[in-house]
Image (tube, rainbow, N blue to C red; front, side, top):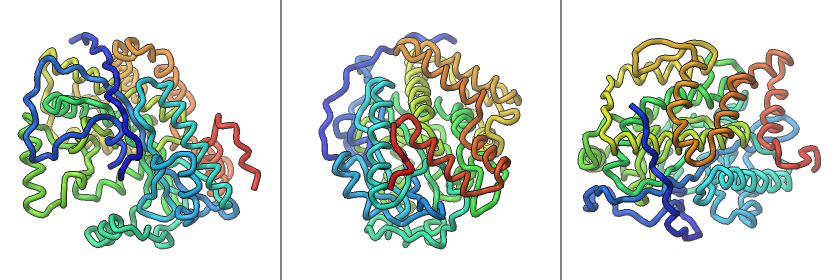
Length: 418
């Protein structure tokens, strides 16, 4: 994916002392490819910790609430307002947006409001609606044509049935970090907190007209892909490059952009991309996620800079914690991988929030982010809200209607107009 605008290097954000495919293009200057030499990490690098968000949306038929293969008709209309910030996705019933570089959560909110409003309005001109959820409650993958684009046809050729069945929607948050050595250390440390972030943003309980029993079934569907899931621990950036080079030389991947880990480094631009979350139903939840992830990256950076110890936990432990978050969301106990013990989900979320508090306060975002987190702890995740509607109505269509309404919440749009 390409960007139509050039963004200047963002101003640097403070690094507080902490106690014991397309969006990266818009977050900073181009970086060398993974097999090119990079400068050694230095103590003088000043990081921006800028943010950007990608969201993938469902295109919905307003009469039967099925997925609607209208991306090719909607895209040129949405691009009149968004330019290249709106792009197609694998299936013709999907569409993706990406914000430009943002320095503050206020900017993230403004850009997401603009993007959602523009896409929804474009869809409505074509008799369609837009929904933000990790899976569709009942539409079947067999009925979803793939976009006639070389990249997507290549995915179909390589992955066959996995690509045909891939009918999922995620939210990706990018954080600008130029120092690649430090970026690897941030990735190592941030892995421990992917499970609670997943639980907090779970938004895909239904699949093919059934309750899957999972809060994030998207996570299970995506986990079948060979380059998905949590990244391994890396000793250094050279260690990271060596593994990526091995993947490429042995034909496991065509290039480093085909690595789909829950946290990955951009190979062309100075960013870390966090890919763990279902797409959030509301703008509020997406803003909360961006704030948490930027604070997580900056806190991990500060701890690595201070050379605070970080345990290299067994991958089996991290994988189980990840699965448990996808299975239960916030409804039961989650694993605190730091202690190896199960704790009530709200307790683990609050622990993470307090750990991130110094960075959130340094940006003036503590009140907003903590308030949005507590709202979810009180009112439920997207998965919980979807289930509540189905339990009350017994109607899949009512669930889709709820998702459509929450996707447009706060945008001052009349969804009943034609």
